[in-house]
Amino acid sequence: MSKADLTDTPETYVREHQETLTEIIKHGDDDFVRALCLAALVKYGSDPDVEKLQEEIARLDELQEKVR
Image: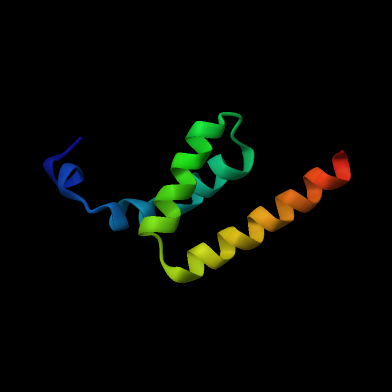
């Protein structure tokens, strides 16, 4: 890890790892880790990212209801 990596802002980290964080939320099996990823995206992501996430969460909720 370089010194630059240690000084990156949370916004930079979230922007650079948005796809990974989203994949963890969608497919992760640890609720705590999923919640941390969601919190990072909501707090440090851009507004369009939050809207996209809300749509994904709604879609997942619909899928879970169909499975039950």
